[in-house]
Image (cartoon, rainbow, N blue to C red; front, side, top):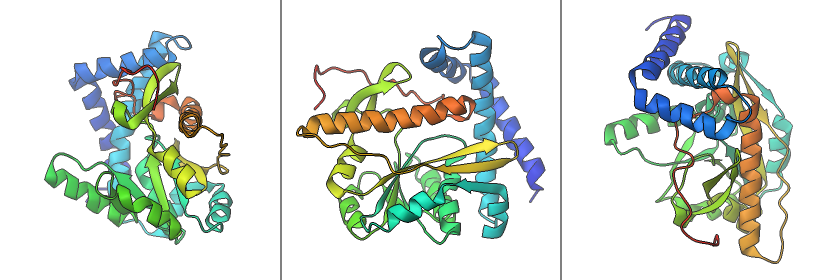
Length: 279
């Protein structure tokens, strides 16, 4: 009901209010930054990154709302796309495509861009605990062109979807329970990381395409990298560990280019290893 420019300013204000109104989360965010970048940046710089991260979250929320009513032509004036040919070539293989991404920039806009290019993608999401918010979130994503898959109940369908040539996106930058994880390096710290994407890549043979959305001033740039080179050895366990580590390193490299745009509030290093060997 209000002009987009004003709405985005209000979103930025919401992020600032969240930053100052929640000391617990603010201190956790800064602590995560100290773990990851404390040896490279000053405390003042880390606090600046945390502050900008909160503002970005508020802006992203508002942008997602406005995008629901945005025509494809208007969207593509707002978002530039780099490397779409990598996706087109991967799609031609007929094995489906795995989109590797992270909570960077306005990641919720990625499905909308693919939909605007007449190539809708599926996305795996964890249902929210609040049923009302979960329905609202799912409706938003579906209106943005994403085919929403339940992270838990739809998992058995994934290999079938790849055989049918579908594209499925995965956010691989969140903490995971130990039984579902391998532990790999993330910003110099051991991080429990879901091993399922590596397993799907090995079993399906689907090419893995890294895709990231980054804010550049008032606009956005969606970067589509070439397919990740998957190396297989005689050890399935080692392959899962090495491939997950590779995926995580790709994500880290993109975050390092725009650290203020990542979701540092997330407790990425929460799960600690209790087993001596990853399985």
